[in-house]
Image (cartoon, rainbow, N blue to C red; front, side, top):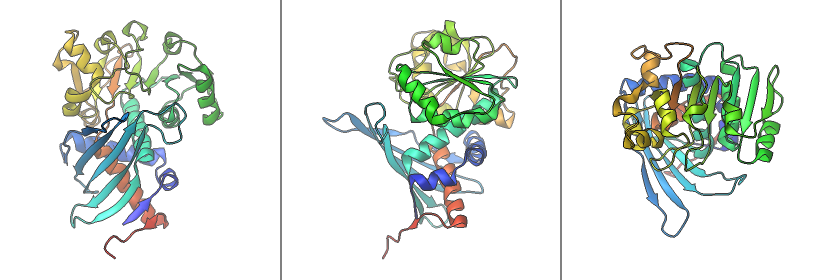
Length: 328
């Protein structure tokens, strides 16, 4: 078994390769060549955190199974540990033997941004030029890096509750050739004339309103992954053609969708389809330049397994990782 650290994963999972792996993972998900129990959470009594368990099986050429174990604690902005700390255990489906133990926070950040980039490729207008990132944490940085190459963006605008942290994010990202980058003071300013937008925050209440969405926008809702937190209001959900990564998970945990259904703004049939169904051609994606499309990212274990298997294969080829023998 190989142990793969944060630095290993940065070397082994470039976004172009990871986006390709996420494409296969989302197709496998929509073809149900997988087993995906809904994620489980266990609160830690008396502490501001919880334990998350995400088991799963992925079929196909890279057949494997495994589990992601995540400790999710509330931490102040800029904390080096981030809000998600954990590991992914990857196992071989034929033998049942462990293949790798991978640092979970980095793998999650990379695969989440790669899947958002994949959804953007499938749903955003081809002439998209202005990208808005709403959020200033690690996921915001990964999303900017993943999304900028998928369209010929000439403008990047970042909004955060702290303009200083938004400016710091752009400094970490560094100059992007041909891209004008700047900080918006308000959410409507960031969304005005945006072609693609991503919400990547820890917000518990909606901060994006439907009336602020310009025609033709593709919106990625990424930050909320539990049913009790939302980044966008009900009218936002209603205005857009709504796509998800895995419909069963969305019906259980997509906070924005559940809120809009609960309040009678949309019905359960509002989900247009899974992103894998769009890639397979089973469900049409964008139908016009003026249409607003929304991709709700919850994250599913097929994404973790596909990224983990890719990293494990590359590590063996390149001699990276630390061998660990548990049966000695």
